[in-house]
Image (cartoon, rainbow, N blue to C red; front, side):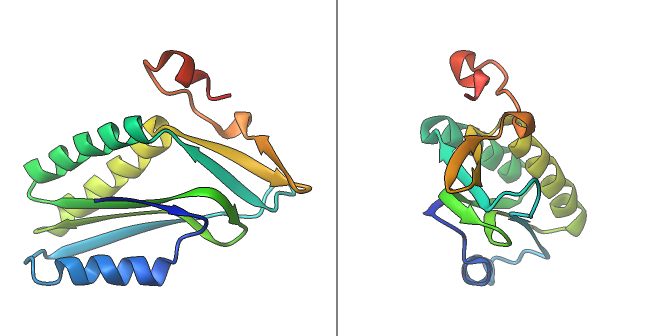
Length: 148
């Protein structure tokens, strides 16, 4: 399941909801990852733009990979502004065995950083400034790969 929210994520509420959704699914492992906006370079927060058609396709491919391992993957991401020390990203893997979940969450988060069509902006002095130095081009995406 892929969830997109305006603004910061309510981490306790989302993790509780996901846990309750899968509580009787007989999974032996539930491995969450929570990404938080940290203070650096004088930013006040981050802002995110998302190209949903590509994100949905990318996530669907990961769901198929998870299904092949008997696992389920869930992800939540923010659209718009997220201030310091708030969460903009949550991912979780549920699987029968812990090793599958541990390895899968690592692969998923790394590929997310490299491939998801999400553009990040610094919030500084009340302005949105594209974070070019911390962005990664999307492989094979043509103009979208420029991330400007």
